[in-house]
Image 1: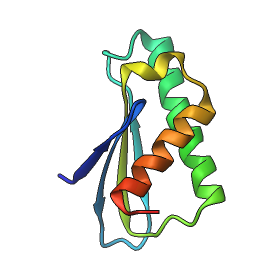
Image 2: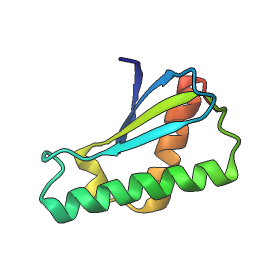
Image 3: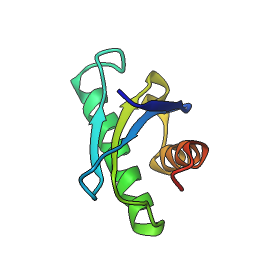
Image 4: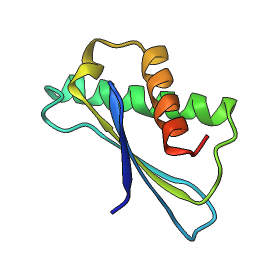
Length: 94
């Protein structure tokens, strides 16, 4: 599967791939809430990753899975971004 790092708002699951580019997926299960909350959580994850990708140099050749946790419901995009960035640093990716 891959290695994982847990954060307050999301779990980062990652593994190297042999494609030479990064693949990413964003997941929000029914535990997060109804469809509106799940969609917002996925949007927050997607936008946070996009901002990190724009600001930082993420090495190529990884598969990323970002799984929303229930705490993401009452959070701001900046908080989620910080949390994902910290998880990437802990994983040794950044």
